[in-house]
Length: 274
Ligand SMILES: C[S@@+](CC[C@H](N)C(=O)[O-])C[C@H]1O[C@@H](n2cnc3c(N)ncnc32)[C@H](O)[C@@H]1O
Image (cartoon, rainbow, N blue to C red; front, top):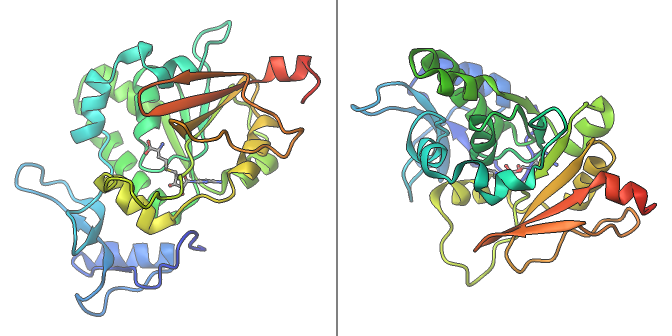
């Protein structure tokens, strides 16, 4: 499997759980750590409170970063994130038959996907970094096992999620999936003066770096989605340049730090831009 993003030659897999380590090493093409002097490594972590092993990115400078759909920040966002009224959800729109199906073309740590899945949308997560995809896959497998013991609503949220490790621009063009909405939240280049990013985002920045090819993805998304493409941007940032007829968003939804650029395909087709 080809590693994408930054040069990750320093990343290795801790040998604390040799069978897991060997399988992951084969899967990702990463070495097992020879010593403990690496800047960044993958390991399986647990705690007294939560004994389940979780695949995590570890470093000397901050605590382990893993994906957990059933606890922590994601569970909090599911319960208190603002439900169907939150801008992310409003940006997805509706279909005549109910909730649109969604491809999250930049799944990352799965935060946005899980919010949508927990509100009833079916979400296919696409992530091109094999390492980030491995963290998501580990979390999804754990959640599938554990959620059967929890409320039906949580079991359903997990069932609404699926995952593919692929470059979305290529996947959309090659597979031509039938989907209502394609959502994108590409990594934005780091600003020099910006306050330190949150732990998850710092790990993503280290692993994948900025996404410098979002135009390609936008173009593929506009040619694939049935209803709309939604792009998350930081407040004040330009919209992604679209090489296809210099297409601009047809509407926007703003929240304090974020803006959602919405490209409604019916409107773009009616105006002859698509
Ligand atoms: C800012 S993060 C997304 C965060 C995510 N919305 C969340 O809530 O956790 C962007 C992610 O998109 C992935 N990505 C960017 N371009 C991609 C592409 N063309 N195909 C697949 N994944 C892509 C990056 O590897 C990175 O993990």
